[in-house]
Image (tube, rainbow, N blue to C red; front, side, top):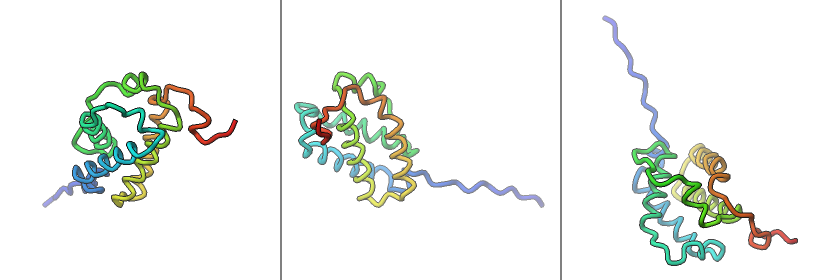
Length: 138
């Protein structure tokens, strides 16, 4: 009798970090940090955060091979009017990675998210960084 063995299904990064509940905590903590940051807070003045959080959760879920897929507008189109600087982008990226770390995301998950963030930076950043905001003296 011949038996076929099924390949072992690898757990997604999304499942490994704890799924939807962890993604929600990460996104909630991320926006708390963003709003506490004097460099980032003005960007979100008078902004309804609920849709932003939903989009971020879907985007993060997609990056982590989760069940949600980001269906929002193209990232370059969405961010261009906001004129995101390199310093602002790096701050948000660092906060996101810190939030995942707090939730005990494994090192390989952190590395994969960091790689995605690096790949997306040129798409999202549309303004020259302010040297003073970036902590660079001129």
